[in-house]
Image (cartoon, rainbow, N blue to C red):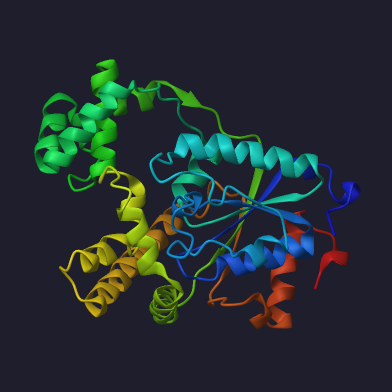
Length: 335
């Protein structure tokens, strides 16, 4: 049932965040909370915005989406980059729609940068003309290292913030320089969209590393059985710009290497699992440094949630006690 109008004076300004590493079970928890609290789930995962990789990005199934309102899942074509700025505007619209309908907005995903862009503000970067974008992409496609060196010679401040092996961010910095004659760092320092006027409360799912590694392996194996390889094959057949973000989604480079005959399927699976594990360690580090802010309150769950039904009554009691203390729900909404 939706939150009642009298539950809390500032209810319209509340946003619940359910986050954690890839494969931690945060989507199951977000869905369970949305059903119990009358919430609307808004995607906060960069790759789940794309419609092309439903299986490999572990987007909610159609049956799951039918159980509660979902927004920003599978709404972007693979040929269109998903930036933090684009996501911020789309998320603001989703939050406004949830509040207007008397529902609690629940941001769910592991892209911490997106939450930072929403809660702390983000640089208001200018639109880049197509010719500048095409020139930058061509430079990176020809030689990423040479493109990075070109950038570093002209915009050392921006280059210092970018990994030389990150083609998307190198291309983004180059295209901005080509279009405006000013670097990314300079734009970020002077033109900022303000923090969104909401109160963020976060539940962070942080399973023990051993449990998470096992979950990553089991999920990737299940994805292969569900058709992930065929999904990647269809994506590659489109002949997209290799610098596009979707082509670096977990599992895409490894399965693409298998389809090219470079890796066996077993080796591709093993490498994809290892790469995902490395990414989850970076996610943990990000949250460790950002746990106090932007969310005003955080509650950690140190167990993997394959299904919300696996929660014990005591764990649900702890979750709802935290939500009650945060002013997000009333006692009658407890499980």
